[in-house]
Length: 367
Image (cartoon, rainbow, N blue to C red; front, side, top):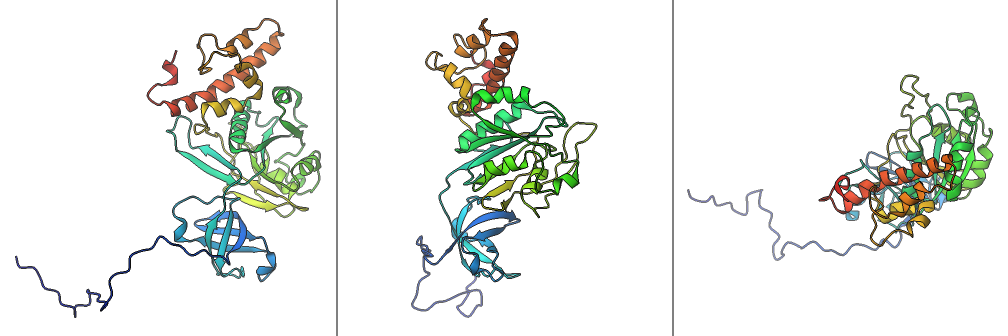
């Protein structure tokens, strides 16, 4: 069949006399006039940004909305990122600036979707935060030490300092739970705020709230915890006008209902930021290496120094110092049980890390 001849008069043909198609360049504009700011919320591809100079906005709030420039590629931008924007920085309704640069991160909190996922499936959560505030209830729902251990591992991996905040201290004694973490040097504080009491959530004070405020003032803190522990209630007490939705614990399952649905950074009166995260029922740490998992258990790190070289610290490994530490007859039975619980928590987190490092050899079959 003869090939159809399409002449230059055909509208489908674009002719540029005397010029060739210009190749795409890898050079990008420097954007020396870009304005710095911090990402405070992300909603369907729109980035809410607080500018360092609030006077640039019409209302003086410093809050603008921006879209990510194409030259930034597919890299994920998260709440807490320090960015630079160009374009309309007035913050007026229906205006958009353009995010053209993301600064290097000081810290990065990450989580895996599920334990046992292949390496590389971690998800960035929050950037440039100083404190990981682990919120857990002493009752209704019951505390979950294994969940706290996961958060500690994630905090040490991210380069963040952990802070344990215990809620509903009027319903149960905090001493047994604190006994697990005091030897680790993890700072802690108790509050009596109950998320089922909305009137109490509206107060700026409350038992223990000022102690929390003093510890997080002037810093950027990420609040994490499983559903129903009172994260949003505590944030409402710390940040007047935050209006984070609160909920009650399911009386049948004993679990909380998800109320916060997105990450949002809120400015503290007097300086500093709190970042509220959605409540979760699990927090994967499969992306953390086996060596870094051990860093999340400072009390076990010292014990593991007596392990033979190359010890993986798994159950059943010959001459693992962790087993000898648990079996030591010197401590009281209660102390031996505490040691056993600590080692069990460590090994539970260690398994997905070892599988990610060598997926061809399941940890259950290593000896």
